[in-house]
Length: 187
Image (cartoon, rainbow, N blue to C red; front, side, top):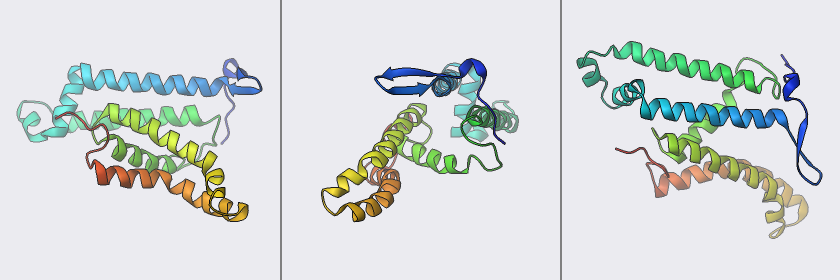
């Protein structure tokens, strides 16, 4: 299914001479930052967040203290499902809505979590920025970089494969140098 963007978010904003950026994409960025801030606040500053963190670290102890850990984790899964639905609704005007539309994102999310650090919200945020930058810059400049070492036709062929491998090479390098991630969770 294809859905139109809301009328009040149509149009573009000029970022510079000849550079137009859609208003809807700014709305997606704002929604993402809002969700990130909400998650950080919930996990770090509320009792529910404290219970989720404690339950993830030592579920039997939290259960022994009287918390129904199954209901708590069911709530976490339900909240995550709600966020996935929200993300699908936000992406619907840009991508077509179909079953499995998030499959490609799952692999990127895994890479982001490994690079950022498992269990770290700050790591997920900065890991996502780093993966996005490496992927975008790699796709944009890999052909030009390869032309320094080989002919134009070979450079295009090699650059396509190299640019799609860059984030995985970054993940492998991160695992080699810092197995806990670049911004691991505090212990």
